[in-house]
Length: 513
Image (cartoon, rainbow, N blue to C red; front, side):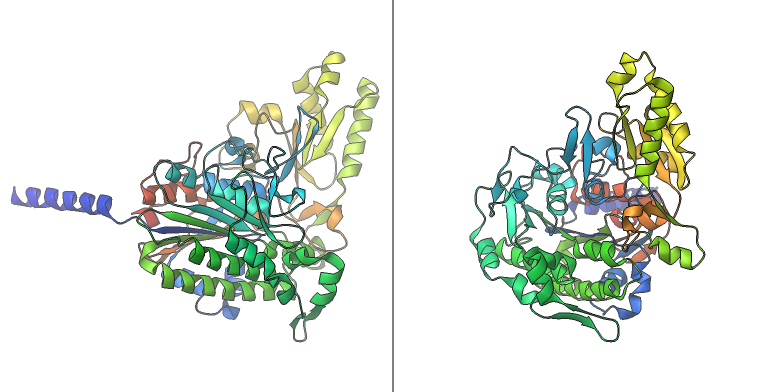
């Protein structure tokens, strides 16, 4: 009996301690744009001890974190990380997509109802209004007075993480200045204005980007030809963003109150450089070495100002990237460049020959075919049969691996297959009639002259690092498959808040218990 009473008291004590545990004063979310999982180990020997290595040696490293959907783009990636669900639910199905109702394109954070703050251009006419669900910080803000701020070189990298209730989001405009939207404020804070007047862009672009015996780039020339925003295409874009993050910690006094604050940082230069040069280039290697130093500086500042014991930080990526097909083919690995215009023109001709002249295809974008529903009705044809006919025809093209109809996506539930990844990226109101998946290693012919891209359901695009770090995070490594949508419910569990309202992920016990 005494043993039973002792065990019961011990259980009560454990429960009491778990509920009375201090919540973190600061949540920091770091997204490295276009970071493949293997970069951690590929660049390990070049990293210092206080950046990526510090996070892994002191935190918990999930080595099999996957995006459970396609397309693996920046907009959907950031939305999924912070909402805990996939494009099928949060609605950000691409960076921009064809709108069936207006027959025009929508940008994932574009909002003409807003006006720019800090610039005369339209770069600030933005908001998160197209994201249909809450983020974990939205749920936190419902019952918490802490501040939520998102920053990035890209508007979507700042806005989508900050959520619907964010206090501020800042990104860089075409002139290399930090700006915002009327969604958040009517005027930039004085200290942001001061940052813009410093002209740090010119300071960083005022010399040479060089690695001995590897490459030399004259940044003065880049600045003169492409303007101040060209800093995004250099590793110094990440550095200037890091400077802003450190300034925000100081000016906003984040983590200095009893309530929980949030700072979300998205480093975008890795994506710009990755697209331009590809993952095999020395420019990319140098970019990550420099980013490691930036992160080290950020961690030192957080530790000094907030304290390791008071912070909860996670680092991940919004997608990976494929090796340039020419690099793959040189190594006899199957790959290629796909000409979508030839495919769609072939489809249009096929439909016209079989059913009469007409605008059968309204749009092809993001590997999706949008058919002309009105014409299909006018001709007395069945939409489902037309979708399947198109899907079967598109399969005849070299480079196409699979095709999927909207009917199949809507009426079936797929599990643990490439079909399920397509389905998780399919939104009935916003997606097209037929989805096309290319073979592994194949990308658009647009990149044939150099560079590469992402967006597929394959591991080079879906496998990304995920690291949790902070005073209450148990050090370790986990190799079981987990998903990017698991981040938000994990943070919510630690904070003791409701999950985001569209959440389909699960909390990770390795860091919540």
